[in-house]
Length: 191
Image 1 (cartoon, rainbow, N blue to C red):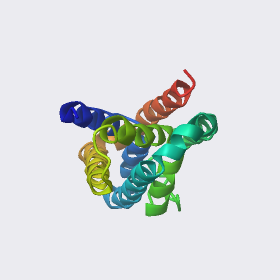
Image 2 (cartoon, one colour):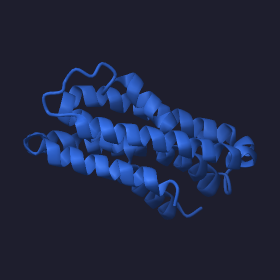
Image 3 (spheres, rainbow, N blue to C red):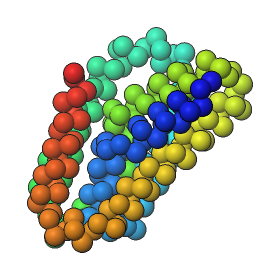
Image 4 (tube, one colour):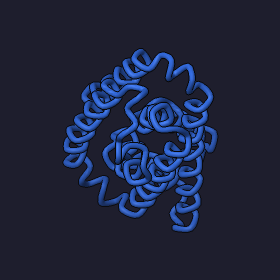
């Protein structure tokens, strides 16, 4: 197994902007670091759970994947468009979101995030299962990937915390860019 390629793939996919990372940044801006951490904990738990399920159900997913993929594309794209709209219309004084930035919203977001779904369904079979078949070794890789994902989420929380004043000063522009990135990601699912 080429561990370098594996780690590069994991870091690039988890640290680059995606729906979860953009929502984390928006949550820090709207509700603060503490609330963003609640969201991050939920996102991390779901990320690890998806990796675990992918490892366990890999053989089933491979046969069903073409049927599931179209459904996930539709649901994921619509959800990302909804998130883009919510971020675009939110302002720095909009602090009344009950489900925004919560553990539950972070957890549920991962199951609708096409980037996470595709990553979790491909990383274990592509990099790990070709070389290792023991359940204990596969679970170690699931834990390692989950930790990498958590570090990526924390990186976005720190970025948002460090640049919070700037982000709040330029809320409309920041929200416009974050919304545009989400819309772009939603469109890229279909290309």
